[in-house]
Amino acid sequence: MAERMFNTASPDITSAIFGPFDIHISAVSNAFNVKIVNRPANNEIGDCITISGDEDNVKKAYEVLLYLNKMATLNTIITDQSVDYAISMVQESRTAELNELDGDCFLVSAKGRPIKAKTLGQKKYINAIKTNTITVGIGPAGTGKTFLAVAMAVKALRDKEVSRIILTRPAVEAGERLGFLPGDLQSKIDPYLRPLYDSLYEMLGFENCAKYIERMTIEIAPLAYMRGRTLDDSFIILDEAQNTTPEQMKMFLTRLGIGSKIVVTGDLTQTDLPDGKKSGLAEAVKILRDVEGISIHNFTDKDVVRHKLVQKIILAYDKYERERRERNKK
Image 1 (cartoon, rainbow, N blue to C red):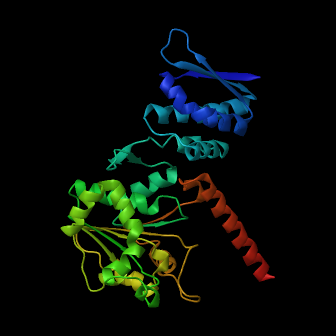
Image 2 (cartoon, rainbow, N blue to C red):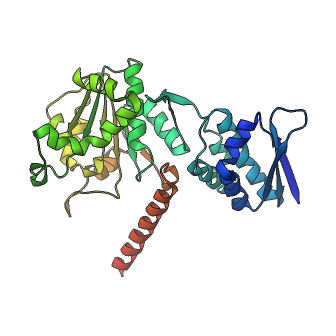
Image 3 (cartoon, one colour):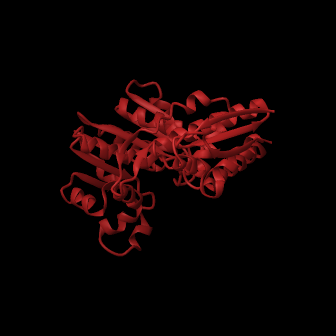
């Protein structure tokens, strides 16, 4: 029976690590089959957490708790997903990579919520956006592709690195179905762009966002509106890029002007193009993979930061697709 212990800086830190009704500490204890107890530290303000069990499992649980202690000390909100992520990283012997997550906040939302990378994949994505002119983020739903891209765009605007933000999406159903929606053309298009508005409202607040849009500092438009333009001094985001055709993707990428940055996001497993139509995103990844100044970043299910069921849904669908392809080969 092995035993390790460490002291927390305060009871509040201990509470954050243990989680409501000890849910976080129970997850760690069950994952590594160890016993974890907490008691007041001698002559200390904080508490003493003791881990006991098999030596190798105690070491792994200790690494997870050290990480959670660091996050709590940095005032990072510890969620079920972040605990599960830390456990999986340690189980895969990727503790050194886990410790690269420093909890640095690069932007504060309109409601005062710090925006920061929650997974190593997200951190690499943010660094790719910082250091490349064009970044392509590909991955499943809930990995923060669009949200982090919009946050980086707002940061660039606030830091005066660019003079405007341009957000665009392909309106896949821009034919007959749009005609059934009420209002003018902009009213018909807005539902397709709503996720972009939601991210902006989170970063800037409704009133500030409306002012930026009114002044054309922020422009939100369907992809078709990009044709024929040269976009200088701009941070440009193409969302849901898996629904572009190869022709649309080439048109969009060649809009890049002086002093601008482009982020393209998409999920190749959720293409809504008609059957037999090739995705412009899939083709662009193959063509541009080795072009200097362009980074292609792939998220995985481990980068999902929504409800933990989202990760399970993604894995279930992936398994189904693999089995279906195997059946079709026979």
